[in-house]
Length: 83
Picture 1 (tube, rainbow, N blue to C red):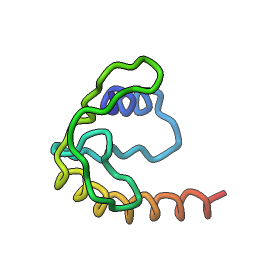
Picture 2 (cartoon, helix red, strand yellow; picture 1 turned 60 degrees about the vertical axis):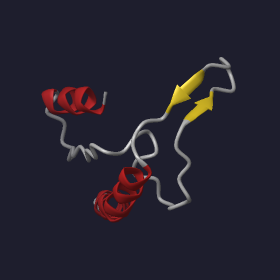
Picture 3 (cartoon, rainbow, N blue to C red; picture 1 turned 30 degrees about the horizontal axis):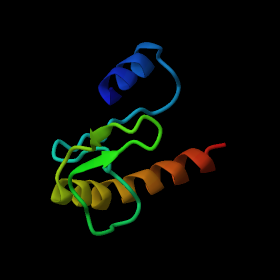
Picture 4 (tube, rainbow, N blue to C red; picture 1 turned 90 degrees about the vertical axis):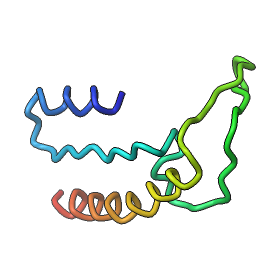
């Protein structure tokens, strides 16, 4: 879904910088600003009651966090200081 969002943003030629941080071995836990012991497996959605897989591997999620944290902070510093 992130790829579709990036394509749509770039297609509208907005003045904002768009960068897709893609981590193939990370799931929905990718890029979290904290590193916690990773639990891998299904989780139950509290609303629907259905089990959901969050994807990725513990190592992939941790690696995405280590890489993304600095990039997100840099992006925020640049973006917020420009306004």
